[in-house]
Image (cartoon, rainbow, N blue to C red; front, side, top):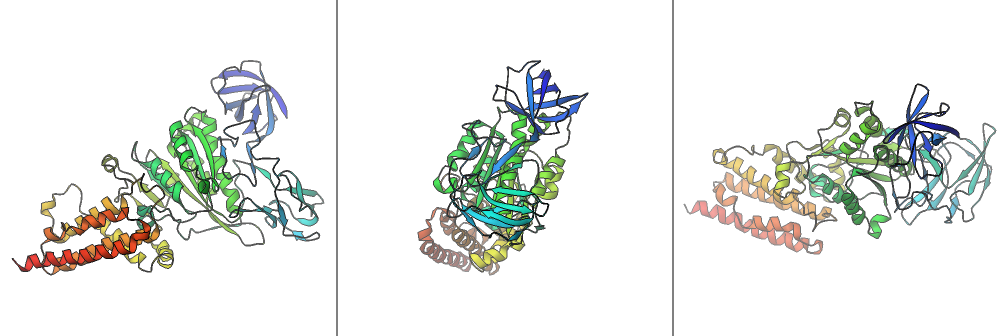
Amino acid sequence: MSKGTITKVSGQFLAAEGLNDSGLYDVVRFPHRDISGEIIGFENGEALIHLFDRATDIELGHSVVSDKGPVTIELGPGLLGKIYDGIGRPLDDPDAPQLDHEKLWDFKARVNVGDEVFGGDVLGTVAEDDKIIHKILVPHNVSGTIRAINENPCKLTDIVVSINGHDNTLHEISIMHKWPIRAPRPFAEKLLPGEPIVTLQRAIDAIYPIAKGSITAICGGYSTGKTTLEYQIAASVDVDVLVYVGCGERGNEMLHILDILSSKAMTRKSVIIATTADMNPAMREASLYTGVTIAEYYREMGCNVVLIADSLSVWQESLLSAYPDEHEVSPYLARIYERVGRVAAIGREAREGTITFIASSDRHPDPATERSAKVMLTLDSALAEKKHFPAIDAIRSYSLYAENTREWFNKNVNDNWAKFSSKFTELLGLAPDADIDKDTLSDAEKLIDRTVSVICDDFITQDAHEEIYGCSLDKQYKYMRLIYDYYRLAKKTLDDGAPVEALTSISSLDEIAAFKHTEDKDLGSAYRNIIEHLNSDVQKAATREEGR
């Protein structure tokens, strides 16, 4: 610890002398004040400090103390269900410990006295609940022989395993440990993203799939539904752990996500980092590092994690405000992107985990995002004004994982999933330009145009209120098949001479549109009824041509 004196005060920025033995990003505190900040540089022998907290009573000559260490967070059982600020303090009580230090946990050892262990090896487990089993690991820089084990009910800070290190040092391991938020956690190997995450959003699962361990950018202007789409994904995504980072959005938006994630099922798998627009930029900028650190911790244990950031554009503004001399955010974003993904963990027990990063932005993607994001969901303001949700622009959106995730859907939903999904992508690519005069289209183009409108207006569009917890994969599959069957039957009948006007106005199209409101228990009967009516309607359209 070192002590300095404030020499300059300029809003949220301070300068102090006497802290020359501290380092960049070291945390500073102010005696008798619940205020902290971090050192962001040195100039003319003075430390430059950016405050995390708002303060109006810091004056020249006041004391400042450096802990000679960066912002760290506590990692261990008890994280799930918590809400933290940008530097990992409990939002409702910043003075409280990040985790409950009094609660007792049952540690189950998986090693014996005398065993030789190495960095990343599993020493034992602690069950946070029936789904998340924390693996207590040998620190990455430690190897040695187990000296003692304590399997009694333990507090987070109690020693559960002692290791005689190969460096002749005694290493005492507790259930909890601390980690600096700006330091990536090491891993053995980076792996290519594989199977998809299931979001229960029809547009994503069926057309623009997101692979576990990938990066997705949701881009669009104001009021295009970016945040709402992230809410929908957060409420229904099928992963072990969800880390949601509010990077400085309005307070009412954070209250909305808290409400969505307040159900018991969501609370048990969620950690929320909440910063709002009225917080200091340093706090907002730190929030994404805190979120990715928690995500890395769970990934290292073999979990599949989704990290959602709302929004990157606000975070970028916070970064530039926190570091006035910086003019380029891409290098900082690149560091975040390097920390997500699918990895093989360090240790002799094989473990794979993933962090899938989904982030929204109000602006055009920066170079780091363009290089890293393999799924781009571009939202269109004109569609949003028409109440399309999600307002995904089919021309400017894409997923580079469409092909290699379809095998998973074929295996786990229906072996025809890939057939219908690829056909939807093909039809969207053939859609006539929106500005073209529809009367100039050929009959075949008119049928494609009508089918694409069904895909966009009925299938992709998903009610954000009625379908808050998404659309089941079985329902998505049957819905795709209905639309494909319409196109297949109509095209065959059109080729046989039926009038396109009759085929594009059949009444069963209304039934297809209404299929989204069918309850899962009624899917089979509703599907069969619509198919029966569809065949009848197409036959009538063919008869109209014969009666000419």
